[in-house]
Image (tube, rainbow, N blue to C red; front, side, top):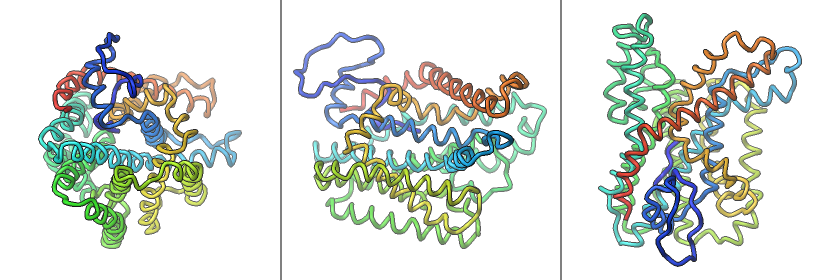
Amino acid sequence: MDTPEIDCYPLPSFFGMPKRKRIVKRKFVIIETVEKSVAKFGYYPQLDGLRALAFLLVFSNHLKPFPLAGESHSPVWVFLQSLMGWGWLGVQIFFTLSGFLITALLLQERSGSAKIDLPAFFIRRALRIWPLYYFMILINFLILPLVFSHGSLGFGGPVWSAMCQTYLLPFLGFVGNFWMPEHHGVKLPLSLVILWSVCVEEQFYLIGGFTLARFKTFRALGQLLVLIVILAAFIRAGLYFLSRDNGAFYFHTLAQMDTLAVGAIIALLRHLGKLPEALMSRYGAILFCLPVIYYAFLALAVPNVGVNHPSQILVFTGNAFFSGCFLLSLLYWRPASRWFSLPWLANLGRSTYAMYLTHLFAVVAAESLLANRLAGLGALGGWLAHALTALLLTVLFAFISWHGIEKWFQRLRTSFVR
């Protein structure tokens, strides 16, 4: 999803080197400004790799299920299909990463200048999020109705009319996620539904920025974050038992805040030096294995991920906790850090915001391009070809998005990096 403040370019290591002007290739845009930002806030290439993993989980969740007929019907394929069903957990990883990175940046700014420049922070966030977000709204409300002009999604059709009446204004104001549980009867294109998580993050930037700027002590801030983690589970329970529907809390910001709060807690403890590097490194392998075991357990124990059951209230709490474990292992355990810092994975992670918002178009486009052309590959071969084509199209769409829309706003954003 979103890549906070430091993003978009593979940067060489400048730490410990004398400052001097460097001649670099054009791909290192405004490198001196970015270098100052990296030196000040820190750059974590392994977290770009984790962001790539989170996207691939979400991407797999939106693919067609594995074909389980004939030779593919084996426990391994059944497990992989179930794991893909749980791919939406990638959204929780995104939230935890955002909570960590944004909090770390704001804490560093506050410790360096005794205050946070909130206008500059909000402008940086807006220049990062708004251009592509509003372009996606334009696609859903104006361009898709032109493409499907004779269907229910066309201008004046029942779906388009319901979308405009119910969701246009809320999504324009980044609060569309609050309308999602209340209007299940309104059918929406998935390319619009997926914007709910961007709304949650934008609300977090607003609330988190003001909170970190106003809190007098780190102890009080830490207590608030712990309280949020606890309250989120109770809020989910209340929303579920009022409606008997998991959707009532899945899209709700307050019910998702524990994942963001866990990331913020890790950033706060790291900022205060409460996470001894030697100790965390010693237990890094355990921290890495715990979420892997947890996700595997979910895939084995609950293969029907769509089941509407109150146990998912605590599953979300587990998502927050184990996403935090994953994050800690990448920050302190050298093997995991090296694995997730691989150039191809880190480079993929830097484009996940555009990939996240456009991958559903790629999935549909790949299906149209390959229709009736893969009969000779068999069911599983056809599925793999579709998945690979959709992924390549997603990367292409992200490339077009960067050069056509985002790049121009990123150049403006560097003016607000102090």
